[in-house]
Each structure stands twice: as C-alpha cells, then as structure tokens.
Image 1 (cartoon, rainbow, N blue to C red):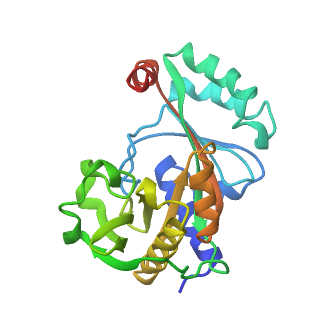
Image 2 (cartoon, rainbow, N blue to C red; image 1 turned 180 degrees about the vertical axis):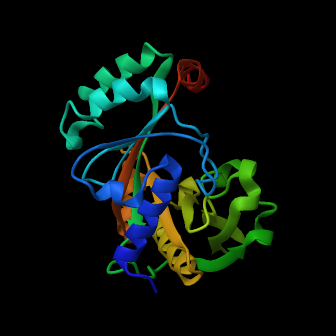
Length: 259
C-alpha cells in the first residue's frame, strides 16, 4: 500500500506532465511559468496545449501558457498573494486581460486525494456489487453520467454499485484518465440520497483502485457543497486546485447551452 506522501508525489508528477513542468515546481516558494505543449502521458481528457492554466498545491502557482499569454499571466500571478489568485475580485483582473486575447476563465475546480489515515470501508444500507468494464455496457444512461463517460467508454475501468433488490440505486465509477491515476465519479438516484450511499461507494471504490496500484482522485467545483462533503466523508482531502481558460466562443456557447 502506498503512503500519503507517495500518493501526493504521484499526483504532482502527473500535474507536471500535464503542464510541461517539473514535479519540484509545485513545492517551490516562488511562482513558476512554463510553456504549454502536447505531452505524452497527460490526462487523456485534456485539450492541449493550454492557453492559460493555473495550478496550485498550496505553496505557489505553476502556470502553463502559450507564448502570447505569458507576460500577462506572469504579471497576474506575481501581483497578488497565492491564496487569493483563485478568487474574486482578483480573478476579474485576469479575466479582463484574457478577454483582450479572445479567452475567458472557464473551468475552476478543486481536486482531492485519499487520506490513508481516514479512508476506510463505510457501511451501506444496500447490497454492494463490484463492476468491471464489461459490466458497464448497458449503464451509459443520464442517471449515471457522473460515474461513467459515454464519450470515453474505453477509460471506464472499475465501478461499485448499490442495489435495492434488482434496482441499481447508486454507482461510483473509475476512469483511467492517466497511467497512474484513476478519477472517481459518483451518482445516486434522487430518491435514495442522504442515506450514506455516495460515501460508501466512493470509499470502497477508492480502496479497490489502490489495490490495483493506482491513485484514486476526485474532482469537485468549489460551489458543489454536496460533492465536497462526499469527498471529505469518503476519506479524501483537498490536494490541488486548477483554473483553465478557454476561448470566448466556447465559454459563451456553454452559457447559451445552459440557459
């Protein structure tokens, strides 16, 4: 079994690949800026190169950018304290500068890693079943869209489901987003929530992933309080944060789709 420190080092090594940085960059006291490019071994859902990507494990900011975004990004990350770079009002400064170059802040998320001192099997009021890839064929449905990804079926490796009789009521799925780390997604049917199903499935799946020599990780938006609470209850702890810029057209299109 890995240690917490080994798990953190693996995550930093993966972030370094994603950003074209060095693992040690995340532990420096000063901010680091690197040029982004397509990198073999990056998380498979990333659209590289980044125009402007900020990542922090708490010590500093590592920014991965295209050359035309370097000066403005470097100015921004060195203008304010690290702990305030991912929040308003400062983010308005970055967004205004991005918009002058056809970009906007798009994605912001917090990532969680398991704390082996807290991770344990949690009780579930329903029968638990383990899924492998071949069991997912008929489960690519809207109600399981967080646990499984229809666009990347080949990456869905492992799952844990909760059954009320023959009815699947909760599902946690693991996606092999890179060679060393599998991401956990979780869905519970609305009428079965607030019974501890999500945390039970998430924790059990994390343990199964660790048994296979992979690092489980969990992602949530800061405003998704339910998801963050599930991460904490399941034995995960905050590890790093990311901010991603995308084209104005993409961001505006996403807002139009939502509205």
